[in-house]
Length: 444
Ligand code: ATP
Image (cartoon, rainbow, N blue to C red; front, side, top):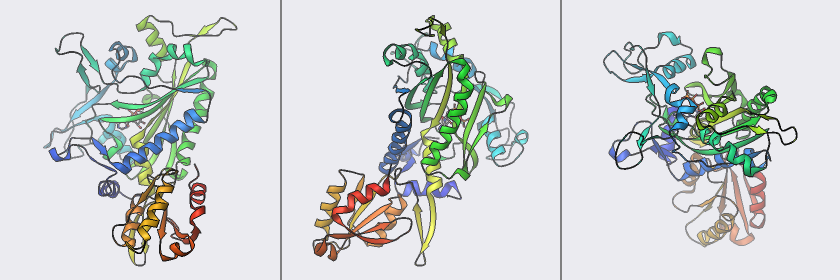
């Protein structure tokens, strides 16, 4: 794995996976763009999440709710009043502002005393904390008048609660069942972000699982384990993953139990995902504010109740960052240092690179034919530019697990060499078997 965040940042920039947004204007704090390979990696992560949440189960349905909801939503959810975080300002030279809780978490991850935090930029003392709301505000309509204020959602979860009743009407589900969605959320984060770990806009993968109240504890335990295992399936070593239950003072106002799935990033153990037992807090609040009945009514007994909710809330950016840190490696081939992303094949942006050995003698034509065939079945790339070793280095750095080389022998016996990114073995395989062999090794 990576030993520093800087080497991952540098690789992402060099190969165009992730880079600072608005760079021609000098950039904008805590905001990044995802380039070609970054987009492909992102899609592999969201596909894996959908597969685990929707395709492989029949008790969860999908949703894509609006980013801008009725402003009462955030009154009911507590975000307007309660989503205020303690803001501190440096009293020393730099005068920068930070969120106290973030500084304390970072100190704790480094094994330092969180009560003694100083300004991370200049070492100055920090002011007393004051409340700061993290929601981005904007207005509907041309004039800023009372009642026109709306908010960009700070989490996707509330959209799910607003549509709980609607979903019951059509989905033919009863508790225990879940609603899952992936989408952008926005938070006015002011603490410097550690690359994509903490950004102003970020994608969340959230699922609200509605259960009979007396089953809440059992489902909470279940989802903690499920979610932990999911990251192992994506290729993260269990050694660098842990579940950390929140202690009493850390718990949110709505939660009777929360555990963070944490990854050992180069910056220390930090949150990848939170799994929370939210009780019936959200449905109670929205029922009160909207005056709608948000109960589940058992058709057999006629009895109604407010389901309790277990919420696994994951961050797409943080998952990608964990995968990149985990996969980053350097080894030595023939006296030269090679940088390689040892991504699980299902996560790799490109599964196979097809490379003609020479730019002549019919190699490019044959390689193109093979590539055109393969790309119907998997994400593939054709590359004929430059020395073959250089082309492999490039594929290694974007984590391509397999390389296919077309040489003079290919034109004689219709076989190619298949190179494995990790073991560096090269074997001769018939072109006719190539797609099948690759699909078997990629799995998924
Ligand atoms: P933190 O305290 O680390 O800012 P949080 O505990 O406030 O995070 P939650 O509200 O539990 O985060 O959000 C669920 C998940 O959404 C987090 O585990 C994280 O993966 C992701 N997330 C939250 N805020 C951000 C952000 N600013 N940038 C990127 N991802 C985020």
